Length: 339
Ligand SMILES: O=C(O)CCC(=O)C(=O)O
Ligand SMILES: [Fe+2]
Image (tube, rainbow, N blue to C red; front, side, top):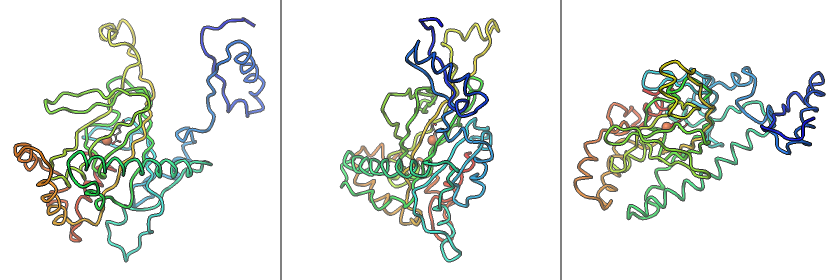
């Protein structure tokens, strides 16, 4: 046995559980303990995406009228291209079970499909309850910064918010993780991202601006629900995830000249929380309150004029249905198949 090391070893937890591989893995563990003092413990089974395909398919979103559950890699498209990601969608627990007596749109607020994994439900519920508190406090701060009473937006909050666990597996650099879109499901998004990078937002000059990970931070963005409530003065921003290469950018010319092979990317994980908007808001109520709110936001007339010109999916009469509910079809677009 050597007494130094040049890398941190990996120990496979699943192999430690298996009689046929246990001894071999114990040897690796011993080496790590004696020689390195550091190790990667892999295959711990604590990862939702590591579940067998069958366990994930058992809670596939196709079983849910509320678009909650698992979406496998390649099943989602945005801007007409396939997104290279898989995901679990969860919602605030405790929603009323939909029956024929309820309005149709209320089906969007349904119950979760949890994967068969101990601790998963507690983890999701705990995360939602904590981040929801932060999100509500944040909305108060937004009202305050717009010189509006702190509770201005409280009545717009929906019953159900959404939490998504997303995995972008390694793929060819520059592939589409998720295509250009605006978040449509509610008021604000609070995103926790790992340190892989790849998230970009579109500025008004049409340039993609990187949103590099900052340790311990959440990335927050406006959704189309909030854009509608503020009459477009606070606009939702288009964003996307582009798969990043693992190598440094100055290798690009060597890759192009095929001197070295194009690398695949590193896996990216992200956890966006979408603060939900009220689903029973009618288009006319929305327009009326937006006009009232816009008028009180202290910004230049120019800015407000521009805002009025900005079309919002939420405000489009196209998306008003007989029950007068604003925004439902854009919900469907945003959640199922982004266009
Ligand atoms: O994964 C990310 O960083 C962004 C995800 C996103 O934009 C979305 O799911 O709406
Ligand atoms: Fe998004």
